[in-house]
Length: 234
Image (cartoon, rainbow, N blue to C red):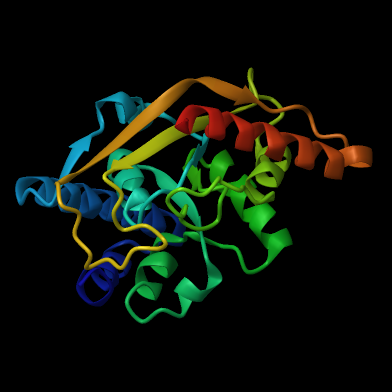
């Protein structure tokens, strides 16, 4: 409905492409906010998002979160009105989602070099960039394993002139587990699942990039982020 009715109308009214994408992202924010409220009203899920409400006031921050369920990005975007995110390239061909990711200007991971440039531009514009370092949902009972993409973006794309170069970390939990990587969406848990989101105050400082040893820095930072989330989840 957004792709067929809402976004085309916005393009007619708003001539500037950057302004149109900003409005489209805010439209998705309110749509997801309604969807979360609707799921709570219908008692499909119970949501505890009070400890993540500070995300609403962030500007130009890199937000990293673990990835336990299918609706993680929906919840985070429902809280942040100026959210941007990195999405898998195949979603730009998905008949149901391609209209959303194209009109909002969400960032494709198809081209690594273009990805870094797009992330830097988005952060500089004041968007909050959501990334799941795992790259895919966690399988219940398995140790989390982060890919290096998030660490690479943090190292290269956070502005050097900021007072503190750090990432914002959000802990997501779903209990009992549902909508995970290993469970079909139609398998309903015996008890109503509680989805909680918590903004972690002790954020991870990012060093200044050193081009002569950037690979080592990325590996070290990735290990630090992975260890941080592993300790928080336990």
